[in-house]
Length: 183
Image (cartoon, rainbow, N blue to C red; front, side):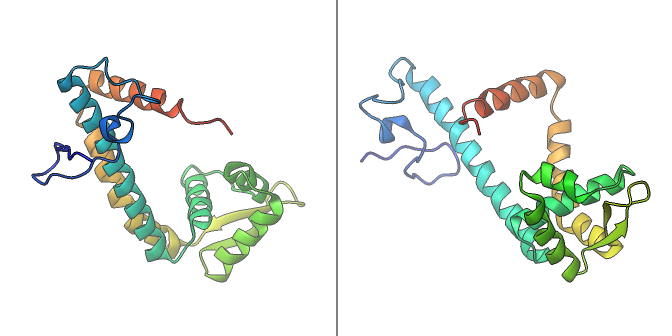
């Protein structure tokens, strides 16, 4: 199999997104219509997305490890904290809807978070049948430390773009997202 320069760094490496390597017969990806420069640049875009995905996964794993949480627990906690920041009450049913899991599964998530002192369950002020959930102050500080600086860095990179560049990227990422199978 031929090597292809990735355009990132100086090392030659096998490109795991280059259709010339993965699909040389163009059975799936019709890449022969592109000239060499366009094809190389397209591969560089996909390689860049792969690097971003890897970096995002590492950042997420580090934040979860720092807070000793699983992925669903971290997503739940982010939702609860966001609700608090926006002065809204988080409830188990809203959380179940947000996470796309059953209320029974949410109960298990909330039990784990409560056992680790990440959340408090409180009586709902308007609905006696429901519970309000809030993150502890210590957990809010830890989440800000674990995730906040990383998010600020991402935000600053996006804010440094021109409005036109942001619209192009939004369009590209939305079009890319639309290629995913629906649920």
